[in-house]
Image (cartoon, rainbow, N blue to C red; front, side, top):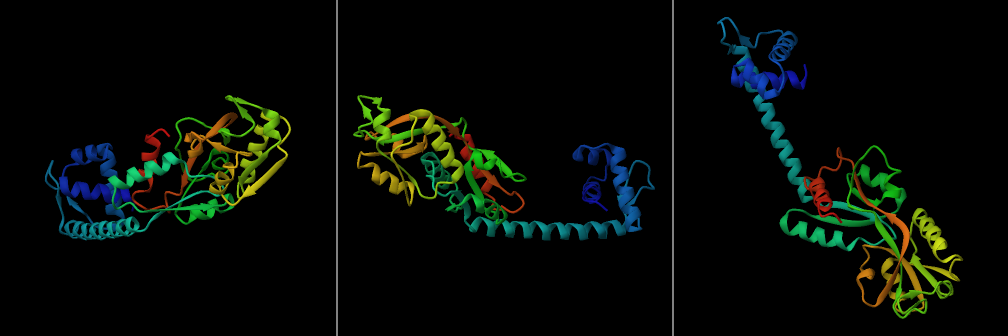
Length: 293
């Protein structure tokens, strides 16, 4: 007995017409016959009376079987509705890579989505790359750069960015390495590079390789602070610089200057569609993708 057998029986019991049943299921009429014959053979009794030519009716046993299946279907639908209600009440946990900033456009888009979906609740979290799989197994969503997404297979994924996001060298506009809109590589090298303490090694290596290709020797000092917010505070001194992607609010500030690096990346959302049962999860992620970040 298969789901296809039962589905075919339910529709035929309602239409009492093989042709209409076949059309509704997008299968052939002989296929409908095979499903019904298979079901009757396994149950050991006839479900339909075919004694009248070109006309079928449910047998008494068939009526009882139909009524029982309808009750089961109602219980299933009620149970599923209950699960969806509980899932909607539970916040969707969205994890970002520790050591990076949540893109401003994603923050704005999320606020817009919440306005049009008042029952959507979410909680943003920052985790290490080593905890990605654990989060996915818990039914949560992970948003990270493509370098990390490529290492995680077997899950649903969606590229949120329409085009690769560039990275920039960022400093306050009073930094001695930027004079009259031009970059002075030697003066950049003579100052301090500040980065978030929890920046993953893969990104750190990308940053350093691109920076070395741009300015040659590394800066005289590299310091790590607790977060990207702390990095921004230290940038106010005007004697240091950092690296940030195009989504950073720093790049929109009139008090900072930027120098584009050759490194680009994309943001990817990953989730397990068998465990991430929040009814808004996929709709929310596809909403972000439609915005062409």
